[in-house]
Image (tube, rainbow, N blue to C red; front, top):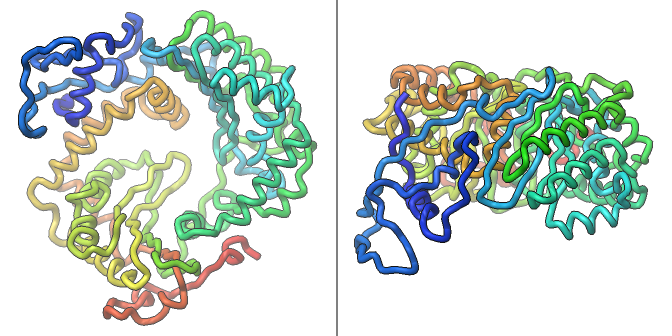
Amino acid sequence: MKPITALPLAAAAFSAFSGCGRFAPLPAPADAPVVGHAASVILPGAPRIDDDEDTGTSLPARYQDIKAPSLRWTPPRLSSFSDTLTPGVVVFWVPDTSLPLASIQLVWPEGRLALGPKDDAAASLLGEVLREGGAGPFTSAKLDDTLEFLAAHASVSLGLVRTTASAGGLSRDLPFLITVLGDMLTEPRLDTARISTAIQDRVQDIEHEFDTPPQTMDLAWDRISYGSNAWTRITDSTDVQRLRADDFRRVLAGRFSPSRVWISVAGRFDKAETRKQIAALLERLRGGPSAKPSMARLDSLAPVAGLPPRGVWIYDIPATQTQVRLGARFPKRDNPDYYPLMLASEVLGQGGFGSRLVDRIRSDEGLAYHVSSFVGSDYDRPTMLGVGLQTKTQSTGRAIQLAFQEIARLRDSGFRAGELSKARTGLAASVPSLFDSPEATADLVLESATWGRNDNHFGRYLRALDTIPDSTVLRVYRKWFVPDSLRVVICGPASTLSKPFADGSPALSTYGPVTVWNGDSLRGR
């Protein structure tokens, strides 16, 4: 694997600047894993910048002429952060002493997919109720005031597949915040007034979730991608309005297992003391909700339906701009075609300016402010690949036509000189920024663990970018980006989009049968 030898100028300048004078960060512990932002040293040959003295160094007339030395960066292995407390319980330590801040995050493989509509409505609100409803010795108001006074945060979130709890603030307050998090998870007060407020807010959110084209696009796209099932369930406001404290107690049962959890701690902290506190928190959880039988398999994954036959789906919404997505099914992220397909997508449209779709549809034709290709990344279910864009309603037909033309042109003519080299460099250069803070590093390491990534995942990724043959990238692109397999989803005014386009662009029916949806269609009413 080749090392990354060039990073954006801003990164090089920051690295040089942050190691100088009074701006120099505190030294990291000797055993701390190296994260991207922690390598704060004056680069060889770089001018020292100091606002207290005149070094006599003159700046070039153009920023392009600033010379910065190459940077060598090797991605860390996941195991460099890990510490197994007990079988099934792993803590990832990401120390950083530059600021007096610290945070903790816990992730359980406990979701909502196996729940029925009413219980899912309760579970989707449970995290907010645990935080807002008071906990342990704290009333809801006292907990609000205390966290606000400390400039700290604490939260719980129940997703479709995983449950997360986190807290953070000043380093000195981390022990207290871990205790508060334990109170929220094991001794929730479930204040009825706060529950009522949470319900009212959620009902308002539901009633307005179809207000704008971007909102409706996400909902309609999910329905095409995964069908009507637990993955795409749209909560009914009636189910939410009927919720009571007992409903939250019921969906709380069986959660927050102390024997199967991933934990990260980031920032400035006392590792030995924090480790003891985590052990105490896990002990509290043994007598908490997890001691009760759960109402469903919390780690279950619902099956994904096949895609409907090729066609066009218009979500009817008044708008002068339309949201458009073209897409087809792609397997999970761990499919071996993912990396070559990422390189191809970078050339097609994911790479921004200089990519095929942006150059043609935005720069040349002026039809879209945003246009991009994408390859979905999901370890839990099959995903989608395709193209997304936003354009004026009257130019929708032309923009779609050009998108299909560019997809076919790349398939038929292959890559131009330098396109894949630029894509490789751009994707590789973006990896260090994933580790640009202790919190970002902790999040990334924790996600990687829950997804079951290889210990040297990021090293393998960089090696793949270097070594995948151009011919393989083109072969994989031709395999997956097949124009005749792309479904078309549009959010905009159906009355206008159903008419012939004034510019003579092909009618939407060119791409398959046209179906018009509205909010009731997606809600199943």
